[in-house]
Length: 414
Image (cartoon, rainbow, N blue to C red; front, top):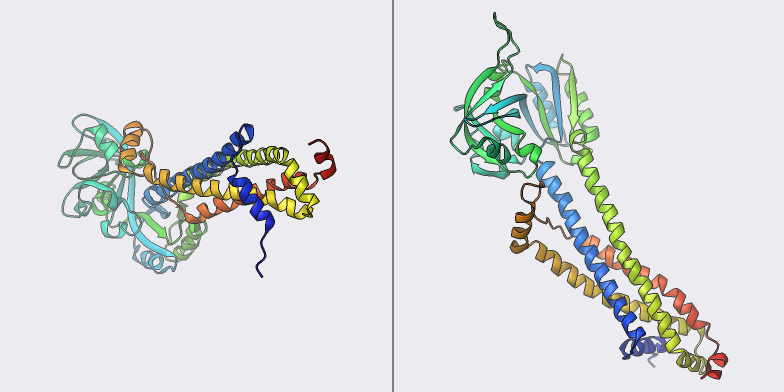
């Protein structure tokens, strides 16, 4: 014989009943607040996760996770390279030469950071080759004096592919008449756009051989750029690999990692994501209180019915279940509507139309001029689960109020 939960049946009837006045308005508001709260949480979390992902993919994968440098240029560095390359957690190693410089065109002169690289090995530690918008990354060979610059730097200097630029670097060796800068012409053969202003206008790449010649350290390097399998391990792995290679050098070596330069930015985005999530979750809390208000008003409207139910033998527990079921159904319906709205709006934000709108509004003002979207279904599940649990908890109070109705007092006044 099938048993039927009478409390669930009554809750369904109350849910479908056409109430009027204040109760109807508060009921509609409860649905709307739950749906809006869930939708906004999904949208905000997807956008903030997108910013986090873009920061990792664009900036933290362009710069090295760590660097090992010598206080003076490193000679006989091949053994050190082999040790680093064989480390189990090192994904890529690339030697480099680096210096501050002035880069000049026929129109302007601008200060920038010059990095001499080995193009093939640099691909293992940086994804800058994936962000070439003009020219070719592979043009950085030993045969020609070629240079790759960022898009913002190209704009400031009014440069394009094929233009000539002059690099001015300090000469550390004094001549008879004193110190003079070294000046050499290079041809622009590539322009990249990462999206981070300090990289797009502050970094230029040439072949390591030409960079070493400019700095008068032929056949020497200044250090190694390193990429780990997990960038969040860079803080301690940078010291670990430093200890490994110190035995192969009689020079003083130092290590740096990305947390020194970009750690505060990443922490700021993570903190902002947490704070925004907490603030937006207040919408769900407001929705929960609207459900409480709606249930209390419904209890006042249905007092006579509840009194009759109790005289017919319904227990306090069954009365409580009516309003717990009712709150759960409102929460579930509102959450599902919010889920659909949230995912729909999130995908619309990533459409080409919105990308063009945001691009026109934010161009040259931020390192990402569009809405980066990263929908993580673990987050979506957590939002739905926490919303339903919160609304169920707040339903306990009106359910307790309903169970304390005294039939004699209610029916005497009817």
